Length: 395
Image (cartoon, rainbow, N blue to C red):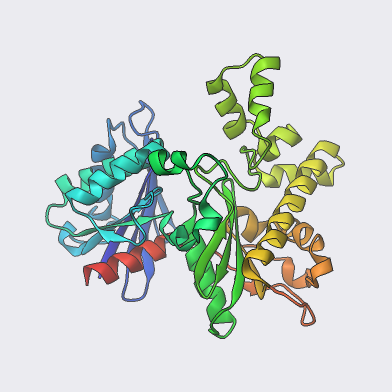
């Protein structure tokens, strides 16, 4: 069975074609700047890379170009579209309605549209991708996999906000979380590495440009750091994470900025970029810190401190801790960040083997033999989660 996995952004389209017989990616790519004059597609087959400059007006035209590359006579990986057995779509927000992945029908599309108020750019883009595939690939079954679904096992005491209760009842204001497919993938793999025992207590750290933590017991999420939107939780590349909400009013009155400008500041000018003044990229910040830049060092120290705080907080949620897992761009590649976080947890008996930790994007246990809590680096694979769910539902 061959599954096409699509991740539709507001102006982009990422994809992978996966052969589920051996779970191997046979082609993948990214269509960027959709609906702009300079749109282009980067299509990869093995080590080959093909860049196609192609102006497209919308997602339907972009998907049509992608399908043409998959069947291209020179470097195509399938003879015709009939070889694609199903399509799996990543959807960022499922609200409270979706607790699992589901087959696409008209009702599912309508519910995704309703949840778009909680993730307008992402959900509208997902609907565009689904509807485009329905036109171009008639009769091919499709599945939606939701970033929020994994977190729907949180107890109400964890996801409710201490606000007037009517805001939850009328407007669905609550904690939803994100990166659910990633947290699910790496936690399942960690459980395997830990011998598959029940009731294992694991904290997964998805640390990238967007970042979140999840407290997981017996394979189920009990709490997660992102909130109603992806702005909450730990600081990120450009996002502030949790802060005193009165700061918003204070800045509006004293800096004289509008609510829209505040939204831009908190989402795009804060986090590690805001403190360092250098870059949202942790590689650039680490290089500057290594060269003596004090603000860069402060940005990293603040990040490591707050991530460690969340890990410590979630030991209350889990009533203990068996393992910590690092994943995503920063978590998989920035070994100094991993060490900085774990150094803050030394009081809990966390010990890191610095030689084992000096790796990038490889699955490895980086804790010492006498560490009271085991620590792993596990590269995430959200596309494979989507493909597996799609195959299982279609079958």
